[in-house]
Image (cartoon, rainbow over all chains, first blue to last red; front, side, top):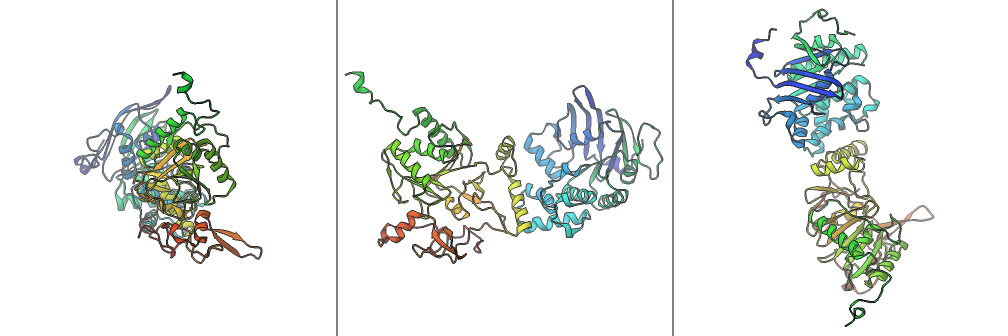
Length: 258
Length: 312
């Protein structure tokens, strides 16, 4: 495996090792290790049930792993195993430093709150209590994710799938997180809408350089967006490598390219 | 000396209807509530000869506080003479032998549903508010266990998100009665369904306020001289109901909280909701009138506390 020289020299933003998670008899994640460098985008591919979404949920601290260490190179958290943080610090970290976009917008958005309100919520949680600031920050964040601003105050339930994903993205990046987690961000969207969302993600990657982890079973998405790719199979990382632009199907034929 | 001489005569009820154990429990809960301003303390709400939802929470607090030297005023939406208030007053008087009054200034304990009297309460007075729903987070978090975790973490972002939504959709705050407040910079509290007009009265008040929900089995308190701030943005402010242009049909007074009486011709007449205060205004003797929370021009007595002067 070859890594870019600049990446070798910097310390990774995220370092996970020995990650295990099982649900009863089902082993969901087994001994996964993962490094993510600042500004880098890493894709995780694998067939359904291979544990890739579970890894993302664990990294977003939605549930505890069975074992594993999780380190983030973020001021105030450098010496900690993130999994062992208490509830309040975990919430603080999740709020300020991790942004997530789910495949299903119902997981990431409040459907009865306006789109701008969904974005503003993150700022309110971070303690902002000025209405004018909330309004302009929500507008700015939605503009970055290329959301049509004339629909700023529409309920997400009235938006198209692509727009809902843009609201989720705006919400995720509202507080300028260090880590962005994307869980199948374009699955279920129309191909042309997919292309537009991917364009936005690419531009965001260029402008903001947030370290990003993308989970998808769509190799096309991973190929376009990520620098490196991990292949997961039955809860384990079966192979890892650089994404070559225009790479053909990998040798592991167990992957569905859909 | 015989045992009969030492024991008091047989009574049908304990003093104040509730048994001694119940009263002691309530008093201890009240002390806890006072020690943690705005925190909802659970208690074992007793059966009473009135139905839940008719002021049983307030009644239990009043019954366990009242002693023979107390003077009690009971109001319902500001009125001393409504059926609910009259029944509660008669029951309390029968069970404790206290004196009753309509005069806010003479009362030592004031039990109220949905109003705070217009005249300023003073040190030593106790205001008991009947609460239908003590949980201010009910609308944003229906799960009580999760709501309590939010209180524990002081995680009240959802409330401000609600305010944001109201401003975006309607251009103003839409909460009417029961406007949520932050007590002592810590707990979010529902001040019971008092109008917004009364909400500032709780801020740095000289009196003790006890709020009790009999059906929900929760009581909480605002001790004297405690900060009670309505939730608002730093640039969009809480406002009270606009009473300008309303003139009391009985006393011709202005800038007090008015009841609106629709007339057959489609117009409205207004009457001050606090009947005890109207009675005082109608007497020629002005000496009996106490200072009010709002002056005759509608200015609140703590200058600058209500920042929004364009009332809605």
